[in-house]
Image (cartoon, rainbow, N blue to C red; front, side):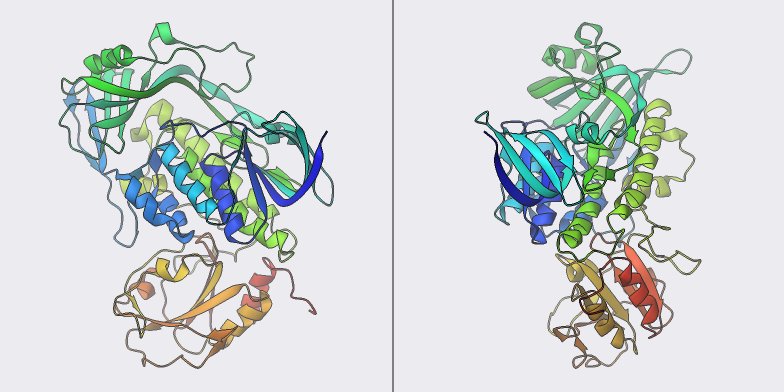
Length: 546
């Protein structure tokens, strides 16, 4: 017999995307349950590449330290064609970007995210499957199958489907999932090798046939541990797990026999740039690649994120990172909606902002998978910033100001980090990331004469926007310690090296509204409160009594 329970949000699927959504919702005080039909987390290094933008997000969530402890740096790529070494690629980012590229096995990312979720008293409900749901104007009624075999009926205000390529939520919403599949199958293996190639470099070794086409390829991504890599290569014929044409979405790990050490050794004997022996096979699988994207990221009170919304080749480690940003974008908006503090249309901005990103990633990864990264026409530095997901922007979004043609960053862009901010008490310079960590919307006031905007932001958002002042290096030290901003005084920082002014393109007093996800919602020059009030009205419901 089904019993009835309630919660604000149900998250279906406890991979990195579902865990990010649930952890951020709980951190913001939203009651949330997260279910996964698997009885235990999978111990596999499936998605391993962590982009600098994802590390910024995890920093904002207050969980960066355990990630930095567990990950290994990705320094660049070594490329070989028919055994001959090609020019080395070093991954070098501008100095103001706080984090580099990293590799972290997916099970480690899931462990750290689950620990973050546990800080708020919530655990993944394992062995629990979402069977179906139906929504109405007031909420969503979900049917769950529990580990005991009993059914539970759960009433929730919102449902988030982070349940992968075969998503029950996507199918239940009736979303289309257009695309196709790549003909090749691949095999993955988590192994150790005894070569002495430079540590921290991805190894890509290709063989070209007489016509110059790639007919064999091996890609090795470093993992934590001595000589440990996640290797992928084209499948050997005897391991092929070709699915029938009508088997639905053939994406991800396939059932059947995975490759053994002898299969991996045979590939290394053909393609390794130096003689080497593979050992310690932790895990292996055959996988197939599809490329698909939904026609919309949600309907009503139900949303999809991650592989439930977009699947594509693993080129450049874009999938999990894109999904984490989906979850983060949706979570802060859902938290406002649950608190009845969201402006009408705020939740619609999730699809408006994230689906174009998904379309771009699917297109780019497909192009790189079929033609190679070298087919990209962008200059190498821009391409690296794009792969790092530092160029993801929401210019033209319905909830940010029009970008205009002013200085960069413009509304919708990622708000850059910077260093060299000092307070009157801390004896060390801070980064902008330190000021923003574990906060929601923040209004940064640069220069003099904008103090009244702090009160405007506090009142127009119902106390949900915090403010702080950033003063030029030559400003008087005690200029701001008596300005009321909401519940207390306005914190003041000095831009001692002028780095904030340079990176934010400021020429005079300017206010910057930074969203919880680290994107710029607007820049306001001068003390007129009207533009700021109008911008906040697109995000926050009017305070009671307005």
